[in-house]
Image (cartoon, rainbow, N blue to C red; front, side, top):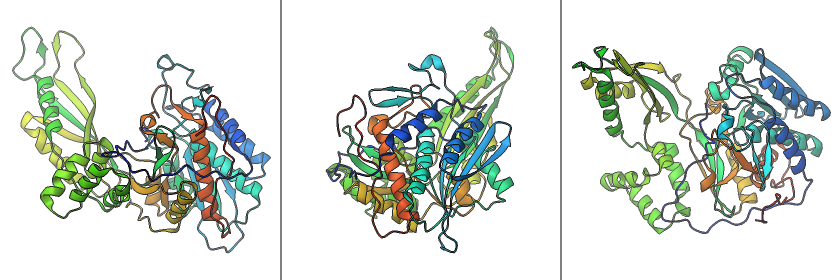
Length: 491
C-alpha cells in the first residue's frame, strides 16, 4: 500500500553539518552489469495493478535461480498472482533465525500519455533508467536476487538461512500477497525471524554525497472514513434550503481547521535525536527547545519542526480528503454528497478516539461519519533498534559511509513489513540513495532511478546480508567496484 518510495522528505533545518565522507568502494567481483540486466528484464514485465500478472516476473526469477542451483518455491494465490521464495540454507543447528529479503513484484498503473518514455519498457538515458517500478520496487527485487546469487557464488559459510521473498499485490493491500501467504500457507508463522524490506533510504546532497541513512522502523495505521451529507434534491433553478454539497464543504473546511495534537512517540524521539548532529545552528537550537522539558518552548519548537511534511507525520495523526462525490446533472441538486478521508495514525494512537473526534468536528454540519477501512488491532509495535539486525545495518553504514548519521524512524504510510511485524518478525526498511529533489518519484510519471544509486543500494543490502548472515569476523564491504554510469561525471 505504498504511495511513494518512502524516503523521507527531510529538510535539514538551517543547513547541514559537513560530517559525511564519500562512500567507500571496495574492489571485488563486479556484479553491477548482471544486476542491471536482471533489473531491466523485470522492468520490461508489466505487473501493474489491478491485473498484476506477477507470475510472469516470478518465472523470470526462477529461471535465474535454476541457473545458479538455488532452491525456490512458487505460491499462487489466484491465477497469475504469484509469490516466489528462494532459499540459501545454513548448516543445521547454527541457531540463527533466518533472514528474509522481502520485496514486491507488482506496481501501480501508468498512463502512457503522461510519460516521456514507454512506462513498461526500460529506457536508459543520462545514467538513469526510466520505467514503472524503477524505484518501487523492482530495484529491490533485482538487488535481493543478486544478493542471493552473490552469496551463493562466494561460497561463504552462512550462520543462518537467507530467504528471498518476492510477493504480489503489495500496492493494493496484499490480499493476494503477503497477507494471503501468512494466513493460508504459513498459518501466521513466516519462515524468517528477521527481514529487510523497502521503506528507508540514504539522503544525499546534490553531488551524491550521503548525509543521512534513514532506516524504516515503523509505519502508521491506515484508516479510511466516509463523510456523508444529506440534503434536499431538486431543480437548481429553485435552490433548496438544505444543500448536501454546502454541508459537506463546510464539514471538510472544519476538518481542515482541526488542529491534531503533537505527540512524541519513542520512535520519533529517537529519530529526532539521531539527526540532531547534522542540523545547522538554527536547527540545533530548535531541537534544543524541543527537548528542553519546557512544555511551552517544546510546543513552539514542535510547530516549527512540523512545518516539514515528513516531520509533521512523525509527530501527529494526519487526515486528508482524497475523494469527493456529488451530483450528476448540471441543473439538479443532489440529495447526497460524500467525501473520503484518508487518515494515517501514529502506531500507538487510539483509533476509536480519533474517529469520535472527527464525528464531533463534522456533526454541527449534519454530516455523518462511517468507517470504510480500519487498521487491524493491535497494531504492531515499532522496532526497538537494539537487536542484532539493526546493529548489522549501522555497522555496514559505518563501513560504507563513514561519518554518516543513521536514524531509525517511522514512515508516513505502511509497507508489507506491517504483516511481518504482526507475526513477530523483526523487520527494517532500507532504500536507495537519493537527493532531496528525487525523493517523491515513485508512483509518478517518468519514474526512474540513477544507476549509481541502484549499485550503491545493492552494495548496502549485500553488505548487511553478509554482516548478519555470514560466519566472518571481517566487516562487510561493498561487493562491487565503482562503475561510472554512462554520461555521468564521477562522484
